Image: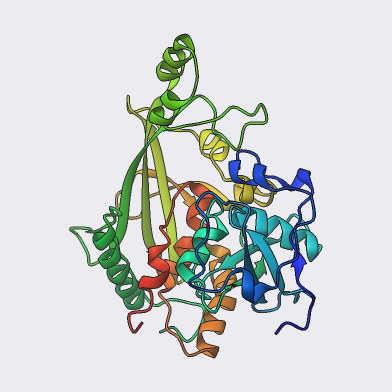
Length: 140
Length: 213
């Protein structure tokens, strides 16, 4: 699975959603590259308040959605689902009329304000959080 | 459970029953209501929100919306706190999940009113649409949120139009068939459409879908 080099998820400031306090903690500097398995192995105690700690996210496409060339990303715990959606849409060059959904457990869409750190706590396994994503024209 | 992207009515009722079971476990407030005249029923939930003049993430001026308790924790000076509290309103939101026979999918009806009974307008509702969905929704608002008569109550409600539901549910359902896992259609669907109109579906429903785990 780790054929792609680990990439650090960095969003340009313009992608920050209005009102998303957590995204203010996104730092533009390049994070120290950490081997994924060491950084977020289950049972590792995260220092309290260390909100810059990244978690491993594996992104999987559902349906006809384009597959991302880089599937494995290190994402700050405080990144919201909305932030991740914006990122994937830009990465896949989707147009505004296309909706992108992200799922946990391949079936449930967390609310856009949900932080990936929380999702990792609930649904992470083997040191990573698997998220499925799917594009669709959901409305109208 | 479903072999295609459509949901039969009995399956809909079963999904709702499972959904409500979990709702009761976590105190999420969903109930099943039946109409006296027929066997039709629907799920409904009421919740109250304190809101300031403008919705937080919608306002380009950057006004923030906080529950009153949070506002008081901020280092505002007294006059601002007073002003804020005076401006805050309690809005009652009602969400109803009905079955659409014509589309063979669930449909989300909703309405909101201020504490004095004044209903929120469609514009107010639009202002409350999550940023995440706004761009797309605003490209064709009249196709997607409309006002219709509630099929059972006969009162005006806003409706999130169901015509595309089957389409966006298909990949999720196909995927679940591929991995041989039953999902709760209503749970999945509501998690996707709910946030667009201010309805939060707690994360624990995601695990509740899998009774065998």
